[in-house]
Length: 165
Image (cartoon, rainbow, N blue to C red; front, top):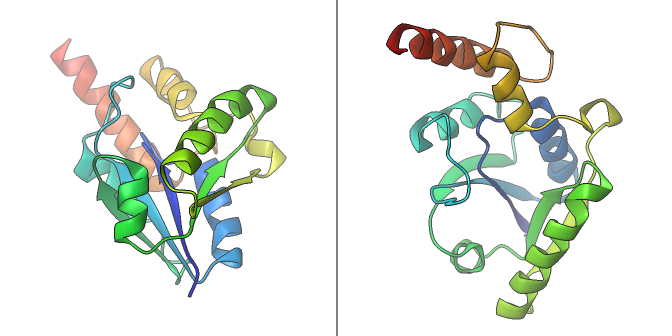
């Protein structure tokens, strides 16, 4: 059975993430969306439990996918889950250098673990969680770049920030 991990912060999950997940689900028997509990360079808008829940609520059309959180090194988590592949999304050339370095380090740490890169549909090439959060910070706009549950969570977050500020 082929098991793949699709790791990320998913803060929040976007339609681009879900598009890459759909592609991965067609290639592997099982895909685990691995939501990172630790990502020091990034300050997350949503806590870990919320990020996991937002992903989980969008898995119903993916029978061979599940979501879990993880901490520590991804290669150690992959071994624990018997995963042989890491799935990474590439939107543009600008993503490649960082992803290439990460893939090389993971290969150095575990030569049996492969990394594959999947491109989302071109309508999501410019989508990033960071940009989506910025758009929603300054106004409630429907972008069609996130699922409904994420849009609702972003609206709640914006409302909470307005009332506490």
